[in-house]
Length: 347
View 1 (cartoon, rainbow, N blue to C red):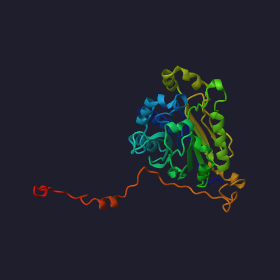
View 2: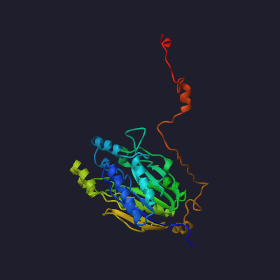
View 3: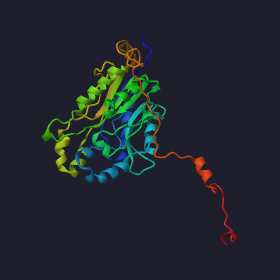
View 4: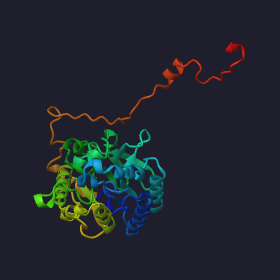
Protein backbone atom coordinates (compact mmCIF):
# COMPACT_ATOMS: atom_id res chain seq x y z
CA UNK A 1 0.00 0.00 0.00
CA UNK A 2 1.40 3.41 -1.01
CA UNK A 3 1.28 6.19 1.54
CA UNK A 4 4.22 8.37 0.47
CA UNK A 5 4.06 10.62 -2.61
CA UNK A 6 5.17 9.77 -6.13
CA UNK A 7 7.06 12.82 -7.40
CA UNK A 8 8.25 14.00 -10.80
CA UNK A 9 11.57 15.80 -10.50
CA UNK A 10 13.74 17.72 -12.94
CA UNK A 11 17.40 18.70 -13.07
CA UNK A 12 18.65 21.49 -15.33
CA UNK A 13 21.79 20.31 -17.13
CA UNK A 14 22.47 23.86 -18.18
CA UNK A 15 25.16 26.48 -18.61
CA UNK A 16 24.89 29.96 -17.15
CA UNK A 17 25.26 33.04 -19.29
CA UNK A 18 28.85 33.21 -18.16
CA UNK A 19 29.41 35.84 -15.45
CA UNK A 20 26.14 37.60 -16.25
CA UNK A 21 23.69 37.32 -13.36
CA UNK A 22 20.81 39.16 -15.03
CA UNK A 23 20.86 36.97 -18.14
CA UNK A 24 21.33 33.81 -16.09
CA UNK A 25 18.39 34.66 -13.83
CA UNK A 26 16.24 35.02 -16.95
CA UNK A 27 17.50 31.64 -18.20
CA UNK A 28 16.74 30.01 -14.84
CA UNK A 29 13.20 31.37 -14.90
CA UNK A 30 12.70 30.01 -18.42
CA UNK A 31 13.97 26.57 -17.37
CA UNK A 32 11.69 26.50 -14.30
CA UNK A 33 8.75 27.35 -16.51
CA UNK A 34 9.66 24.63 -19.03
CA UNK A 35 10.13 21.97 -16.33
CA UNK A 36 6.81 22.92 -14.75
CA UNK A 37 5.03 22.58 -18.10
CA UNK A 38 6.42 19.03 -18.28
CA UNK A 39 4.91 18.19 -14.90
CA UNK A 40 7.95 18.60 -12.66
CA UNK A 41 7.23 19.34 -9.00
CA UNK A 42 10.87 19.95 -8.06
CA UNK A 43 13.58 21.55 -10.23
CA UNK A 44 17.28 21.42 -9.28
CA UNK A 45 20.03 23.65 -10.68
CA UNK A 46 23.81 22.99 -10.66
CA UNK A 47 26.46 24.29 -8.28
CA UNK A 48 27.04 28.05 -8.53
CA UNK A 49 24.69 28.27 -11.52
CA UNK A 50 24.54 32.02 -11.00
CA UNK A 51 26.76 33.65 -12.17
CA UNK A 52 29.05 30.66 -13.05
CA UNK A 53 31.47 28.20 -11.51
CA UNK A 54 34.91 29.87 -11.09
CA UNK A 55 36.81 27.25 -13.07
CA UNK A 56 39.54 29.80 -13.84
CA UNK A 57 40.93 29.26 -10.33
CA UNK A 58 42.15 25.88 -11.62
CA UNK A 59 43.62 27.32 -14.81
CA UNK A 60 45.73 30.30 -13.78
CA UNK A 61 47.61 31.56 -10.75
CA UNK A 62 45.66 33.89 -8.43
CA UNK A 63 47.96 36.81 -9.29
CA UNK A 64 46.48 36.63 -12.81
CA UNK A 65 42.84 36.44 -11.70
CA UNK A 66 42.17 39.69 -9.85
CA UNK A 67 39.84 41.07 -12.52
CA UNK A 68 37.91 37.79 -12.71
CA UNK A 69 37.45 37.74 -8.95
CA UNK A 70 36.20 41.32 -8.98
CA UNK A 71 33.71 40.52 -11.74
CA UNK A 72 32.64 37.32 -9.99
CA UNK A 73 32.01 39.14 -6.69
CA UNK A 74 30.04 41.85 -8.48
CA UNK A 75 27.91 39.30 -10.35
CA UNK A 76 27.25 37.17 -7.26
CA UNK A 77 23.88 37.47 -5.48
CA UNK A 78 22.73 38.57 -2.07
CA UNK A 79 20.62 35.83 -0.49
CA UNK A 80 17.93 38.45 0.16
CA UNK A 81 18.49 40.26 -3.13
CA UNK A 82 16.18 40.96 -6.07
CA UNK A 83 17.47 38.06 -8.20
CA UNK A 84 16.49 35.42 -5.63
CA UNK A 85 13.15 37.23 -5.26
CA UNK A 86 12.56 36.95 -9.03
CA UNK A 87 13.29 33.23 -9.06
CA UNK A 88 11.12 32.70 -5.98
CA UNK A 89 8.27 34.52 -7.73
CA UNK A 90 8.55 32.11 -10.68
CA UNK A 91 8.57 29.15 -8.30
CA UNK A 92 5.31 30.47 -6.86
CA UNK A 93 3.77 31.10 -10.30
CA UNK A 94 4.72 27.62 -11.46
CA UNK A 95 3.92 25.97 -8.11
CA UNK A 96 7.22 24.05 -8.03
CA UNK A 97 10.07 23.63 -5.60
CA UNK A 98 13.41 25.04 -6.79
CA UNK A 99 16.91 24.14 -5.59
CA UNK A 100 19.28 26.86 -6.81
CA UNK A 101 23.06 26.94 -6.64
CA UNK A 102 24.54 30.45 -6.62
CA UNK A 103 27.54 32.45 -5.50
CA UNK A 104 26.44 34.52 -2.52
CA UNK A 105 27.63 38.04 -1.67
CA UNK A 106 28.15 39.25 1.90
CA UNK A 107 26.55 42.40 3.31
CA UNK A 108 29.59 42.77 5.57
CA UNK A 109 32.27 42.68 2.87
CA UNK A 110 32.51 43.62 -0.80
CA UNK A 111 34.95 40.75 -1.37
CA UNK A 112 33.49 37.87 0.65
CA UNK A 113 31.51 35.29 -1.32
CA UNK A 114 30.14 31.88 -0.40
CA UNK A 115 29.23 28.85 -2.49
CA UNK A 116 25.54 28.66 -1.59
CA UNK A 117 22.26 26.96 -2.30
CA UNK A 118 18.66 27.87 -1.52
CA UNK A 119 15.61 25.64 -1.53
CA UNK A 120 12.47 27.57 -2.49
CA UNK A 121 9.01 26.08 -2.01
CA UNK A 122 6.03 26.20 -4.35
CA UNK A 123 4.76 29.37 -2.66
CA UNK A 124 7.99 31.24 -3.35
CA UNK A 125 9.34 30.98 0.21
CA UNK A 126 13.01 30.21 0.85
CA UNK A 127 12.78 27.22 3.20
CA UNK A 128 16.51 26.51 3.48
CA UNK A 129 19.72 28.43 2.82
CA UNK A 130 22.98 26.51 2.88
CA UNK A 131 26.58 27.69 2.49
CA UNK A 132 29.15 25.09 1.46
CA UNK A 133 31.05 24.07 4.57
CA UNK A 134 34.51 23.90 2.99
CA UNK A 135 35.51 25.14 -0.47
CA UNK A 136 37.35 22.35 -2.26
CA UNK A 137 40.93 22.54 -3.57
CA UNK A 138 41.34 25.70 -5.70
CA UNK A 139 37.85 26.93 -4.71
CA UNK A 140 39.49 28.20 -1.52
CA UNK A 141 40.97 31.00 -3.64
CA UNK A 142 37.44 32.25 -4.31
CA UNK A 143 34.90 31.27 -1.66
CA UNK A 144 34.83 31.59 2.13
CA UNK A 145 33.95 28.66 4.38
CA UNK A 146 30.27 28.27 5.22
CA UNK A 147 28.58 26.98 8.37
CA UNK A 148 26.10 24.40 9.59
CA UNK A 149 22.99 26.60 9.50
CA UNK A 150 21.80 25.01 6.26
CA UNK A 151 22.35 21.36 7.25
CA UNK A 152 18.60 20.84 7.27
CA UNK A 153 16.12 18.47 5.69
CA UNK A 154 12.84 20.20 4.82
CA UNK A 155 9.59 18.29 5.18
CA UNK A 156 7.54 19.18 2.09
CA UNK A 157 4.48 17.83 0.24
CA UNK A 158 6.87 16.27 -2.30
CA UNK A 159 9.06 14.57 0.29
CA UNK A 160 11.75 15.31 2.83
CA UNK A 161 14.38 17.22 0.83
CA UNK A 162 18.03 17.75 1.72
CA UNK A 163 21.12 18.61 -0.25
CA UNK A 164 24.86 19.15 -0.28
CA UNK A 165 27.15 21.00 -2.67
CA UNK A 166 29.75 19.10 -4.69
CA UNK A 167 32.60 17.86 -2.48
CA UNK A 168 30.42 18.00 0.65
CA UNK A 169 28.98 14.76 -0.65
CA UNK A 170 32.34 13.23 0.29
CA UNK A 171 31.91 14.32 3.93
CA UNK A 172 30.35 11.39 5.85
CA UNK A 173 29.40 13.52 8.87
CA UNK A 174 27.57 16.11 6.78
CA UNK A 175 25.75 13.32 4.96
CA UNK A 176 24.87 11.56 8.19
CA UNK A 177 23.44 14.81 9.58
CA UNK A 178 20.93 14.82 6.70
CA UNK A 179 20.20 11.10 6.84
CA UNK A 180 19.36 11.50 10.54
CA UNK A 181 16.62 13.99 9.61
CA UNK A 182 14.71 11.44 7.54
CA UNK A 183 15.94 12.56 4.13
CA UNK A 184 14.01 11.03 1.20
CA UNK A 185 15.33 13.15 -1.70
CA UNK A 186 18.98 14.16 -1.71
CA UNK A 187 20.08 16.89 -4.14
CA UNK A 188 23.77 17.02 -4.96
CA UNK A 189 24.98 19.89 -7.15
CA UNK A 190 28.14 19.90 -9.27
CA UNK A 191 30.15 22.02 -11.74
CA UNK A 192 30.38 21.36 -15.46
CA UNK A 193 33.99 20.22 -15.14
CA UNK A 194 36.62 20.15 -12.44
CA UNK A 195 40.19 20.21 -13.84
CA UNK A 196 42.92 18.88 -11.56
CA UNK A 197 45.76 18.06 -14.01
CA UNK A 198 47.04 19.07 -17.40
CA UNK A 199 46.20 16.45 -20.03
CA UNK A 200 49.91 15.87 -20.66
CA UNK A 201 50.33 14.63 -17.06
CA UNK A 202 47.44 12.17 -17.37
CA UNK A 203 44.88 11.00 -14.84
CA UNK A 204 42.61 14.04 -14.72
CA UNK A 205 39.86 13.83 -12.10
CA UNK A 206 36.94 11.91 -13.58
CA UNK A 207 34.07 13.77 -12.01
CA UNK A 208 31.41 11.72 -13.81
CA UNK A 209 32.60 8.50 -12.17
CA UNK A 210 33.25 10.24 -8.84
CA UNK A 211 29.84 11.94 -8.76
CA UNK A 212 28.02 8.73 -9.67
CA UNK A 213 29.90 6.88 -6.93
CA UNK A 214 29.24 9.49 -4.25
CA UNK A 215 25.58 9.96 -5.14
CA UNK A 216 24.99 6.23 -5.32
CA UNK A 217 26.74 5.64 -2.00
CA UNK A 218 24.69 8.32 -0.26
CA UNK A 219 21.40 7.05 -1.64
CA UNK A 220 22.32 3.48 -0.69
CA UNK A 221 23.17 4.53 2.88
CA UNK A 222 20.27 6.96 3.28
CA UNK A 223 17.78 4.74 1.40
CA UNK A 224 16.80 7.93 -0.42
CA UNK A 225 16.44 9.03 -4.03
CA UNK A 226 19.21 11.19 -5.44
CA UNK A 227 19.28 14.08 -7.89
CA UNK A 228 22.74 14.69 -9.38
CA UNK A 229 22.45 18.18 -10.88
CA UNK A 230 25.59 19.09 -12.84
CA UNK A 231 26.55 22.14 -14.85
CA UNK A 232 27.24 22.33 -18.56
CA UNK A 233 30.04 24.15 -20.40
CA UNK A 234 28.63 25.80 -23.50
CA UNK A 235 30.52 27.51 -26.30
CA UNK A 236 30.11 30.91 -24.65
CA UNK A 237 31.87 29.78 -21.48
CA UNK A 238 34.65 28.01 -23.37
CA UNK A 239 35.20 30.92 -25.75
CA UNK A 240 35.39 33.39 -22.86
CA UNK A 241 38.16 31.41 -21.18
CA UNK A 242 40.09 30.49 -24.31
CA UNK A 243 40.05 34.09 -25.51
CA UNK A 244 41.80 35.03 -22.29
CA UNK A 245 44.45 32.33 -22.69
CA UNK A 246 44.45 29.95 -25.68
CA UNK A 247 46.67 27.55 -23.74
CA UNK A 248 43.75 26.61 -21.47
CA UNK A 249 41.87 24.99 -24.36
CA UNK A 250 43.70 21.70 -23.87
CA UNK A 251 42.76 21.61 -20.18
CA UNK A 252 39.11 22.46 -20.82
CA UNK A 253 38.78 19.96 -23.65
CA UNK A 254 40.72 17.28 -21.78
CA UNK A 255 38.63 17.40 -18.59
CA UNK A 256 35.67 14.99 -18.35
CA UNK A 257 32.28 16.67 -18.65
CA UNK A 258 29.91 16.25 -15.75
CA UNK A 259 26.67 14.30 -16.05
CA UNK A 260 23.21 15.03 -14.68
CA UNK A 261 21.37 11.91 -13.54
CA UNK A 262 19.21 10.31 -10.86
CA UNK A 263 19.58 7.31 -8.56
CA UNK A 264 17.10 5.29 -6.53
CA UNK A 265 17.40 4.16 -2.88
CA UNK A 266 19.63 1.27 -3.91
CA UNK A 267 22.04 3.59 -5.71
CA UNK A 268 20.92 2.36 -9.15
CA UNK A 269 20.29 4.77 -12.06
CA UNK A 270 16.72 5.85 -12.72
CA UNK A 271 15.22 8.35 -15.18
CA UNK A 272 17.13 10.46 -17.69
CA UNK A 273 20.84 11.15 -17.95
CA UNK A 274 22.41 14.14 -19.72
CA UNK A 275 26.10 14.85 -20.31
CA UNK A 276 27.04 16.01 -23.80
CA UNK A 277 23.83 17.94 -24.49
CA UNK A 278 22.30 20.86 -22.61
CA UNK A 279 18.72 20.36 -21.46
CA UNK A 280 16.45 19.24 -18.62
CA UNK A 281 16.53 15.68 -17.27
CA UNK A 282 13.47 14.12 -15.64
CA UNK A 283 12.73 11.23 -13.32
CA UNK A 284 9.85 9.87 -11.26
CA UNK A 285 10.48 9.08 -7.60
CA UNK A 286 8.13 6.72 -5.79
CA UNK A 287 9.11 7.57 -2.22
CA UNK A 288 7.48 4.39 -0.94
CA UNK A 289 10.59 2.62 -2.26
CA UNK A 290 12.59 4.26 0.55
CA UNK A 291 10.96 2.02 3.14
CA UNK A 292 11.87 -1.59 2.32
CA UNK A 293 15.68 -1.03 2.17
CA UNK A 294 15.55 0.27 5.76
CA UNK A 295 14.97 -3.36 6.76
CA UNK A 296 18.46 -4.16 5.54
CA UNK A 297 20.54 -1.22 6.80
CA UNK A 298 19.00 1.66 8.72
CA UNK A 299 22.04 3.70 9.71
CA UNK A 300 19.93 6.10 11.78
CA UNK A 301 17.80 3.32 13.22
CA UNK A 302 18.50 -0.23 14.30
CA UNK A 303 21.75 -0.43 12.32
CA UNK A 304 23.62 1.95 14.60
CA UNK A 305 25.09 2.03 18.07
CA UNK A 306 24.34 5.35 19.75
CA UNK A 307 26.11 4.13 22.86
CA UNK A 308 29.33 3.87 20.80
CA UNK A 309 28.99 6.77 18.33
CA UNK A 310 27.66 10.31 18.70
CA UNK A 311 27.51 13.39 16.49
CA UNK A 312 26.88 17.02 17.50
CA UNK A 313 26.15 19.59 14.78
CA UNK A 314 26.40 23.36 15.31
CA UNK A 315 23.70 24.96 13.17
CA UNK A 316 24.30 28.56 14.24
CA UNK A 317 24.78 31.01 11.41
CA UNK A 318 28.29 32.43 11.71
CA UNK A 319 28.55 36.23 11.60
CA UNK A 320 31.64 38.50 11.57
CA UNK A 321 30.46 40.43 14.62
CA UNK A 322 27.85 40.13 17.35
CA UNK A 323 26.33 43.42 18.43
CA UNK A 324 25.03 44.09 21.93
CA UNK A 325 22.91 47.18 21.29
CA UNK A 326 21.80 47.58 24.90
CA UNK A 327 25.40 47.73 26.11
CA UNK A 328 26.27 50.21 23.36
CA UNK A 329 23.47 52.59 24.38
CA UNK A 330 24.40 52.33 28.06
CA UNK A 331 27.99 53.29 27.34
CA UNK A 332 27.04 56.32 25.23
CA UNK A 333 25.31 58.92 27.47
CA UNK A 334 23.98 60.99 24.54
CA UNK A 335 22.78 58.09 22.40
CA UNK A 336 19.24 58.67 21.24
CA UNK A 337 19.05 62.17 22.78
CA UNK A 338 18.82 65.49 20.99
CA UNK A 339 21.78 67.60 22.12
CA UNK A 340 21.57 71.39 21.99
CA UNK A 341 24.79 73.34 22.26
CA UNK A 342 24.26 76.84 23.62
CA UNK A 343 26.59 79.80 23.47
CA UNK A 344 27.20 79.59 27.22
CA UNK A 345 28.19 75.96 26.94
CA UNK A 346 30.97 76.88 24.58
CA UNK A 347 32.56 79.39 26.94
